[in-house]
Length: 145
Image 1 (cartoon, rainbow, N blue to C red):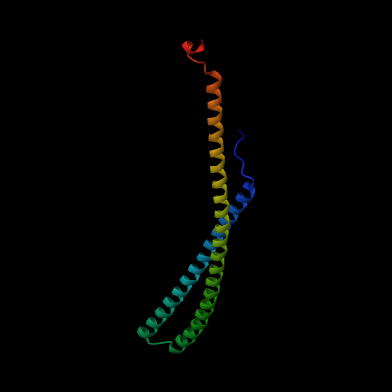
Image 2: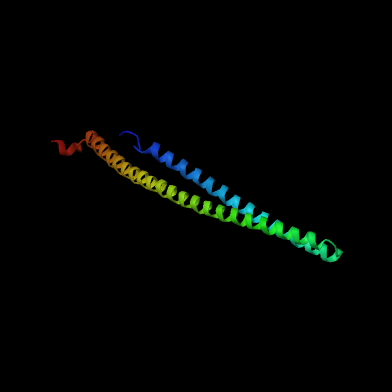
């Protein structure tokens, strides 16, 4: 019997690569959101530190107000960037899920075809074994007469 050949092997490989690329895209998008979260937390720490410094040293209240205005605008920009990054992350996740489903469909088709090939191969081996047995079989000597 011929060896197992899956007719969609090339497509299966392409789908697997696509799924891996989508997974990497999701990871990059997740890292972008995390970086923006870190930036927002850092800005909040800077504002808190500036307030604490101003209240303990008693100077620079106008500078503190200007700094707080600047940081509030910067935090708004970071929040907008984060919203966009989360939207991109959700889009990448949806693309990954679709790619994974396409890949799984081909994997199931491959498994089904391989199982069928194994059944056919086993049946052929059984047929060959029974033919070989019958070809070598000789009736017992007392029954030949």
